[in-house]
Image 1 (cartoon, rainbow, N blue to C red):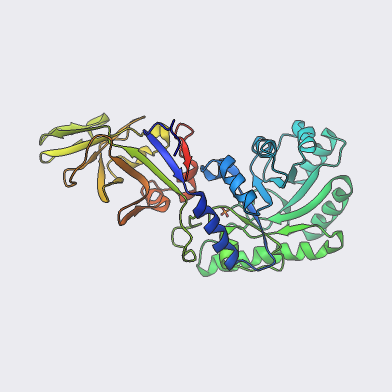
Image 2: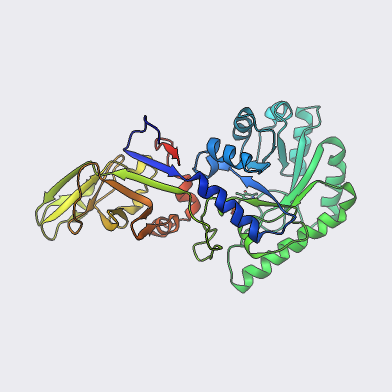
Length: 373
Ligand SMILES: *Cc1c(COP(=O)(O)O)cnc(C)c1O
C-alpha cells in the first residue's frame, strides 16, 4: 500500500476482484457478447485511471463515459479502445471529439444538425434510441421518422452504432418485465429496419438487462454497476462470486466517556441514557458520508457494529463503542465493506439514506484517496 497514504478516510479498491467480477459477468453473458465498460463518474467513484487500465489489460476494449473530459482523460492515458460519450457534449467541443477519436451519442436530430454545423469532419457517432425512458434519443414510437434520421445522418457522420437504455430492467414485477420486453422489441424493430447500414455496435442491455434479459442485438453489453460488484437494485441476486470491489475505511481518532444526560454533536440530537464509551471518526459529509446517517447508520469496528450517535459533521462523527472491546486511537473502522463476519454494503447505506448503491459509491468525495490492492 501507498507509503504516502494519510489514514484518515480512504477507499481500498480491489482490482483482482474487479477481474474476477469481469470473468463472472462473462459467464452469464452470451458467448458472442463484448463488454463495454461503463466508467462514467470516475468509474462510479472507484477512480477511472486504475479501473480503465486494469480492464484494458484484461481485454476490455470498449469504454463508455458521461462527458468529453472523461473521454479525453482516458485517451490521454494511452488507451486506444473505443470511447463512447453517453450524453451531451456542447457542440463547440466537436473538434475535440474528432481530434481524440471519441464516439459521440446523437441525442436528437436537432443535436445532429448542430454537431454537423460545428465541425466539418466525420465525427464518430452512435444514435441513442428512446424506447420509453424519455431521457435522450430518437423516438422509437415513430420508427419511420427515426429510420429516416439515421439514414440521412449516416452519410454525414461516421456512425458506428446505436443503442437504447432500459429503465426498469432491475425490477421483477410483471409490469416492469412487460415494459422492458417492450423496450427491447421496439429497439430491435428499428435495428432490423436499418440492418443494411451494418452498424458495428447495436446494443441495448445494461447490467440488469444483461443479467435478466436477452436481445438479438447482444454483440455488446454495457456493464456498469455489476462490474463494481454491486446490484442494480438491492433486491436483485447477483451470480455467486461477484463481490463489491470498494471498501471505505477510516480510523478512531479519539475515545472518551460521556455521562448519562450528556448530549453529542451539533443540534444535541443524541442524549446518553447511561455512561457510554464514544469514539470519534475523522470522516464527514464533506467526504461524501451522508449526513442522513446521523443517529441512523453504523460502522464496523473489530467486527462489531458501532451505531452513529448524533449528527454527522463536515469532517467527523461519533459512534457508540460501549459494547466493543479493545477500541483504541488509530483502530481501523469500516464504513463500507467487511469487518470480521459483518458487512455494510452500498445498498445498506443506500437504504438508510433513501437512495441507491450507485449514489453511495459515486458520492465518496475526491478528498478520500483511493488506494488499489
Ligand atoms: C450508466 C449507463 C449504463 C450502465 O448502467 P449499469 O446499471 O450501471 O450497468 C449503461 N448505459 C447507459 C446509457 C448508461 O447511462
